[in-house]
Length: 196
Image (cartoon, rainbow, N blue to C red; front, side, top):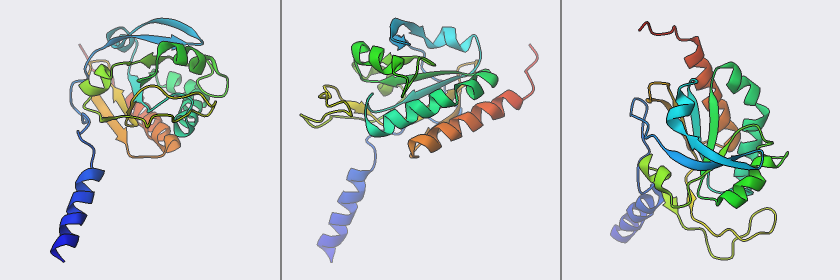
């Protein structure tokens, strides 16, 4: 009985993420990173993007993998709704910029609608307190290309123009993740503007 209890507790501890992501109300760490949109690399700055309105920063494990393909496609299909709410969307993964150039331009996924950023060393993910895990050697993406980087957990942050996290969305299916992020930006758009 005692062994079973210990085994259950150990299994539960292993199942928990190593870190807890930032929460609603926390300051969102600013970042500058190489990103790609429609196959073209450029320097993305969160600070600059926030000057235009809220930013949806969505972290995903790897380009060209099942759930990430669905999530990117769902963000692309709903891009006009995010724009109508005044929000910018940016994806962040540990993929190389070369992989992201292809992913960002692919009409089945990002379709050139929004940028995806190359957090190659995981520094941005770590600053948002997200767990990073190694991908098993030899694992291939949906194109049959070997994945040569680690993966971050799928979590989306809606960040207000003043640099605060309005919503942190995790633990959902890729489609539900996008839907909840869209609902959060639409709710922000309905709030009365603060007087300066």
